Image (cartoon, rainbow, N blue to C red; front, top):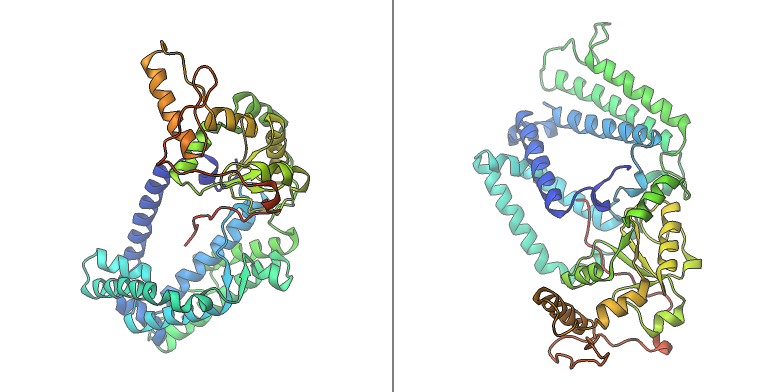
Length: 420
């Protein structure tokens, strides 16, 4: 499986929180070890006396950029599955200026302030308190500035896409820019900060190929390779392993049961997109709550982000399974089908049949739970004779939409945000 892993079941929510916690602790540890929990050291970059922050950030940027490009070209990473923060031009420019002003005044950015506070520094604690206060203040004024906050949207766009540049050329240009920034930073530290010449510096007069120069050579070589290697993104169509397809089908790992989907909907989960692949008329007569209508013949590689978990269903078992296969061929590794389609949903979730009166207690208890779920979705459990039992009035009802009022393409369910 290509990275990223979380959305496609390699580990669940609990493990993801543990991974995030461990990663955060490690990130904070290395920031503190590098001295970034000290406001004096961070503020020194604005006076050109100590520019290690600039060096660290550029090193991280170009290492990640070249590494991601190479991993993608080797097939170890699918960049189309990596979440991109949507671009809102003017709101993000204003936000960046405010963040920069706060960095200059307080000497910290949000991450380094948390590191400083965690190590017991008073100024870091004050900065964190101010950051929390700023968040509360922003929440109060947000309703008045929501129009501006959502203005000038460009969507999830990258610089090569917007300016129609080759991805590899951008990699090389950023590497060269970073090396130039390193050289300028070393010059400023020597002339303004009074740092003694360092033989291990990029601009050292020694002809020796030191560690920094070796890293620079490797990164430039990576940039040159990227310039001629093409786009790191995969095309809209991908090969699907027939053996893996057979294993998925045989083990039912590409399926979601109606009961499982009902539990997810009741729990309010928003980490998947539910797609009804029937025609608009059938969708209008009845559809699973929260489903968007995308008929099977109109599925395209860009109908949703490729890092989404997509659950498809049709009239029976065949349409949903076929839609999931089509989406996987488009590059959606998290495509699944509802077992039995909408017919199984109606039979198992909306109209479950009561067990025999002499059935075991466990079976009776399970039916009571299923009956409550049926009423939640506007259905009615049936007794052994097929007659519906009375619905519980306090449970919410979902009325099937009449055919004449069916929208052609309803909006998808709201997704929880990713990234930072």
